Image (cartoon, rainbow, N blue to C red):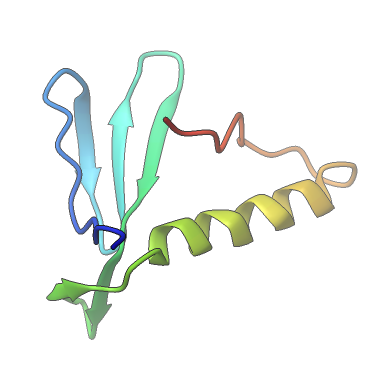
Length: 82
């Protein structure tokens, strides 16, 4: 069973902000944006999550960044994870 990730915890990294869906860490020259499986409604973050929601949102963003890369510069460096 795939775990539901509703919050990241990387104490060795500098957490900048935690939004409705994304956790953002400052890596110095770059930002690490982690898309979680959190869900929200009317600006309230729910206790439950949706399995693989973060993965799907990242893949959708990646698709559109790639589609538009020859038209508009963007900030995406990589979507690889370990």
